Image (cartoon, rainbow over all chains, first blue to last red):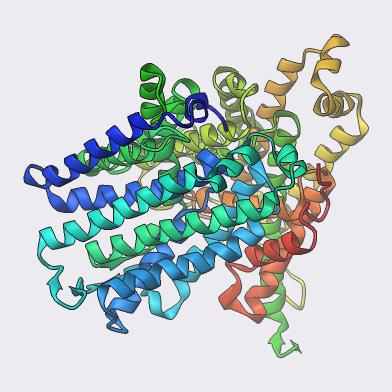
Length: 319
Length: 294
């Protein structure tokens, strides 16, 4: 999927991205003064999740339709570690990330055997398997999920039940993950990944082991998605089936598509729009699904560059 | 009587359920394969269209008094027609783009359709009466066979066979296969390929709706009935490989039976067994059992 010619051209023209990053950091520092912090934390968790997803689709051309399995398993693992094992918060989040990394290794091993549409179907099917596992396994709490996960103390002395302390941690994790993905995209590894997306046979003939690059990208993406899920479980003190369900996999596709596939900031904006929308439409019940479907259709038919993609085109700078 | 420590009654009962599920897997994956062959699109709306089939039959019966047998004929035509509208107005704009956009569009449509039905009819399931001609059942000695279930297995088997015959053995099917190979060339011979694509999509959707009508008396008619099913059908398609029509049919029935047997011997894995088989097939034969890697 290379709808974004702008992101490829002028790879060294990164001034616009740096400016946008500074704007984002300033916004996140000031926003809790006017916006409910829990809402912002939710947006940041999903934005990180969408950034992880975007690494695969936007830069590797791989549409994973099962990314909820990483969000969910990261969340379950972190919740279990924090609640049942009593691990300190930072270790619980790391453990959740680690579980998602391992899952990413094995799922990636299978999924990269096929391309395009098959890749999407395989990831979807494997995610459904993880869903059924979460439904039946004894430690996930079935329909109830894992509730009352303690937020605990960060590094043993910062009480995360303080909203602003929690906010600071989530912001640090989000920015860390975001910068990491950003670095990966602009690293030589990311360039090879883009080359594989554009023309796999040519990349192979140049001596790159395409499968290995795709596999590593898949593991990174799964790990960061797991980090987002683990953080989300700590923030909301809950890990539940919603996060492993296929509709969650669809939601992250929607966020990224709406924000702009293959842009750096698109997933963040897309996540912010979708979460805000869900917040306002929550009382309308099933209409949320309808609205999401309509956005999907409009994006695919008429708005394939997404919000940030269109903005970048207008500014003639990659964002 | 017992086989491997399992009462035959339970064994054959689960085999029967497996065959029933397999019938639906076969019908649905067949429709997906036909659509994919010509359009190169995986129709994510398939599950929603299966659900529409069941709902339209339910509404025809309860609002207009039109019974099961007429529904079998009318519903696939109605739902197939909505499919053709979708193809003409939306899908046809995407053929020049990456095929993944087709998947995303049909996913969005599935969300819209399921959401609308849930708003209108709520989440709870509605019962659909078994047609009186097929009520009751036969005692086969080793098990009780409800007539309706036997009918579903036989009917879907013949529908699959007929589809296979039309595609592989008739002139119309030859055009279709030729258009799958090289649409430009077929068009140059004076065959209206865009119309053929529309009709093919309508036919595939009609198959999904037919499966929905047949499923209505067995499962509850509910807006979510297609959502989870379609994911299993995707796995079936990956296992079979989309190259062959016969492959789609065989894999559908075969996996239904495998799932039924798992329910007898290791019930915990019954909901995941198809995904596990998919993983194994991907490791051993990535193109699928009947597929060819391009």
